[in-house]
Image (cartoon, rainbow, N blue to C red):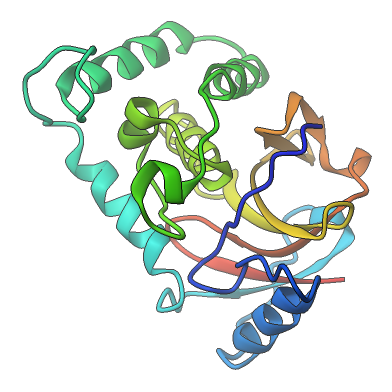
Length: 230
């Protein structure tokens, strides 16, 4: 694992609290608790052994919904070359061509290749990249300008959805890294009766039961989000 970390939040919930390690998690859980409980999702595997509660209230996750909306607009794009520094149809086309190469492969192989492809991108913090404390990029923006942890996870999420993975199979997961005491974002794939973790800090795709240093706070996809409790 690299020492790189990032702030990954629905809004301010997973913002790193430099002078008070762990306080961000207390704030996050307190805010999520105020949103109310939905029915527990008992059908899926228990992520890192936690119990999850489902909600359809996306009000706290404007950065996520904005990234999804920008993704839907990227298909058209604008003409230009892949050497340009602003998003255009060439960047989108290269991504689509790569995904086309993966169609027909075994789903687990698709997961591994998508993870590897996105992890090759260079890590860069949001303040340096976007001039903002926390920005959730669309896949096109990420492939054009690189990004931090939630940007890797979003790009992997959308790639797998384009390959036919269902809403029930993929979620972005916001976690607390118990070793580094910071927020982090990863992608979870529910498949073959287990959950596989795609992480920009770890090269191989790994079963969630083999990871001990992540504490999930929430997971999210397009239809819903889930609060996780130990």
